[in-house]
Length: 270
View (cartoon, helix red, strand yellow):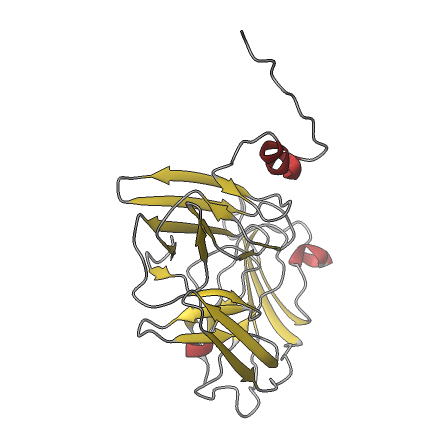
């Protein structure tokens, strides 16, 4: 006797995961809430690799679980760096990893089969991010003041109090140089002084220009910004199309050309 197939209709693509679970189908990558994020899975004899991508123009924060075992690592495809993740939960042959992805951002996670961390890891926290320092200790990173708590896989817990942070610095004066590319033997170059950081397509003189634009500004940091226990993020804001590269004090801040990613520039400040 043949079983009668069951068909379930959904209104949005983001609801497909929940519909499959209602039918008893367990997805390889499962989201904690409806989210339009895409994933791909590759497997070797030693590891599982998951690529997760946010194709939307909006940030996504969720807790995906993966059909894998072992300790998770984050792989930087631009630098080749592999870093152990400090926060995750393992249960029932799956590993749950909290993720926050900017618009257009992706992440590659690797799981070494059967590997267990030598020290307890974080299973829950209200901090923005926790980083394992490699010596069994952890660093809490957050852009908000107040109390943060951590729970560990061995049942332990910790609390830290983050001091009040200085106000965000928003540069107002910018210099924009656009080197046009075109069929002319010597395409024009534009040099403009700006207040704010507009897309050059919104500037009448550059509305139809195509090429490379360099925005430059100088910031005077308030006292205490480079203290040993304080870091600094640079948020380039949303870029509508194209790619970007950010330099701070003449040094490349991040090899990634993905627009809109927040960048840790702590080591580049003076």
